[in-house]
Image (cartoon, rainbow, N blue to C red; front, side):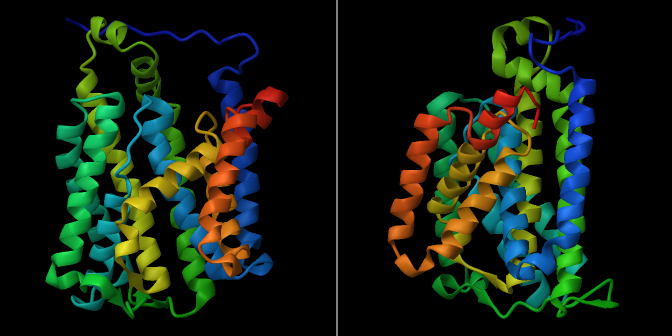
Length: 326
């Protein structure tokens, strides 16, 4: 059966794709300006942490926001790529860009395998399958000899970018992370607002109708799953190189829950919502560190308040009130 053309009329009060592009252009310019000022406003490594987890959250939202697929195992790709980048840089002596490429390749491969099995399910069954796969990666990371077990891989060398630009300098490191982050966000934006993104949202809103139009839904779900794993892998690799550490925390199920928290707080209905959610969560962890384990309880309280008072997330609710697409 041939594919039929799918058209999407703008809802009342909503902007057209052209309007979305114009509003997002301004936000990208603002984001680029903030990235330039970032290391002079806050400690560079703190901003780098926000960017890594912001990209991690946006990669999850590529599935959750467009397909409505909630993965409880997204930390598997973030964590395994962290180990891959750390091992490649420390043991194999690869330069940072090659270590990152290897990390992304590993996460893409893992996403392709797990995605092929996961997308056959939906709803809570999909969430549980992804969680099960993530736990497999956790126990593999705990037992595998090259991961360092509970100690992880420590003292990962940052090296020199292309063998020339030393990343021991925090500003050089920040510039690399900021550029890769911005390029990744642009790529996610292009996917979200491309014909592919329209098909994904059609699958989310009415899967039987999309199937009846001749689209092979499972293939689109699998492709999105793999892409999300790849972006999560880039975030994990950047985190390992930047903080010179890959640990079990990166693959623990709590990390998957934390990234879901970021997306929900910021708003999965808004493109930049997960980034705002990551910023708020990292800020809470940093500012409330003195409270120890109570930080988790405080995060839970914030999450409940967001669910009760801001059904679209913080940024999503603000955008809805102002009739903007953020």
